[in-house]
Image (cartoon, rainbow, N blue to C red):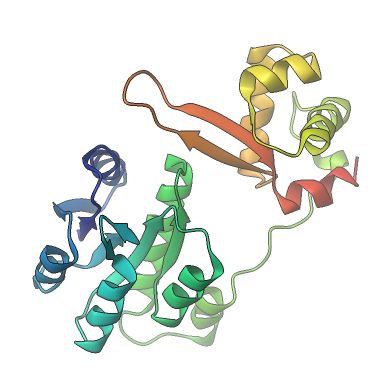
Length: 232
């Protein structure tokens, strides 16, 4: 079991993190705190394997905690989960060895992908490894280009082109309702295509959380989606 600690100053977001952790097999939440000081104490606990760390912690900066963890050589890994979308924060996280960087808001699928990749990394670094395992860890291969002639049953080239073209023309985030209206396709059919596009990494998904009701999901083309649009 991989024990995960949360350092996040917004209780609602921390609660979402905990629920997401519980949904991923092999992971459990080992505690949640809101400040740099309490975060450092939690990081020093011997059973903590992984920390989900926010950058903006009230009047404090989570990156300072990351630097302190590394300076004190605390044996724990860190995933930054933050709304800090600036290059400096990204570069600092990278240089201080974070294993992933998730921008809020994010989907459960992206969160799960991050944890599962981390679990694979932990397994790879246990005992002796072969060069092939090292290559998979440090040099993950790019997603192959989708070939229109190889589409699964129920997914047509024409509808793919229609939806992807609508997303390219609007560029900004679109809800499923907006996509359905612009592409003139039913919600049921659209959901099928959105699932397929997400599996193929052709789109990015943005989730807006509210204090009540269901989160709002929005979509836009990823770079892979733009590249694949030329294939249709």
